[in-house]
Amino acid sequence: MAIEAAGTAAERTLPLFPFERTEMGPAPEYRELRESEPFKKVRLWDGNVAWLVTRYEDVRKLLADNRFSANPRAPGYPNITKLRKVLTGTERPSFIRQDPPDHTKLRRMLTKEFTHHKIQSLRSMIEQIVDDLIEDMLSGRRPVDFVEAFALPLPTQVIMKMLGIPHSDSEFFVERSTTKVRIDVDPQDAIQAGVDMRNFMRDLIAEKSKAPEKHDDILGRMIVDQIQPGHLDIEDAVVSLELLMMAGHETTANMTALGILSLIQNPDDMERLRLNQSDEVVQLAVEEMLRYHTILQFVGTRVATEDVDYNGVMIRSGEGILPMINAANRDPRVFDDPEIFDIARKSTYPHVAFGFGVHQCLGQPLARLELNVVFNKLPKRIPQIRLAVPFDELEFKRNVLVHGLISMPVTW
Image (cartoon, rainbow, N blue to C red; front, side, top):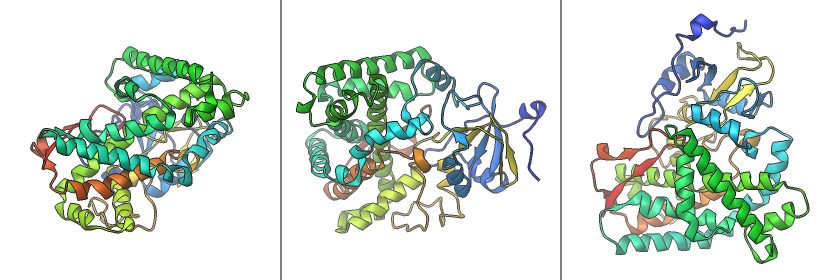
């Protein structure tokens, strides 16, 4: 028999979401809920209620189920924060927040830029950036903030080269994208940050449209193949470019810093990568870092478009769904000893750090390549890297949608 949604009186006693995660893992509440209530109603900041889903199998099924919409303007869509709700009302949604067929059309226009072959052709460029950043660290003063000196510049330089944005504008984009992913920022500041980025993109499109064939980058090809023939509206292009810029550096920067921190905490793993000559060893390490940290706090937020009976739980049309990929990636039904960081882990099932289904991360081949290069090179070049402050003095991002470190002083 299906379980009906809680009544209004009962909803007032539901736990307030989101829960606070730990420095190196998801919120501890997920572990208990995964065993006792894998579908749990929670209360959001605005008093609305949504279903929190914590088991791996359920999360994957929900993310692949087209009866649940990713459209933030759909009735009942759960806005995790006030800022998300404000931005939804003021900004055109990107393709990751649309449903097929619109999502399919817009995503397909970018897919060729992120194929395995296309991304692998960038390896030498990424290796050069990594080498240069390591040299700068080695020749500079110590201690150094690893986030500022390495983790953030690497993906920022890569995605700007790919998009064809001048390197001189990197600070402009980093500042504004950082503002937009904060939970505690003034909504007007976040709105203005988005306006600034989109205005920049419009101006860049206008400038490159004068001779797009001269620009061997994503934007140049987008103008020639999509915008000029009329296949892509300029505003959809602007929003897509903003998304690529933000997602292209924010997530990988945080993953790089947390990955190095994990190796510092596990010196045997650092030594294994230092001595390693096999790319498979690094690939396994990268996948474990992605699983273990799962830095995206909220991905795959959905709303039911019809009544759905899921394993005896009745989800009504218009009810919000929060599939927690960080909880799913610690599910002991799928991953042995999931709370242990094990760079040699070989799992039967893949993690869901990049999501699942048609909305899974378009840029995952790029993220994997960047991380592969980092963890192939850095343990060999600076194997003695260590924290320059005690662990409990590290400043973690507690008020952002993406988990990570604000700074990480290191020395060697």
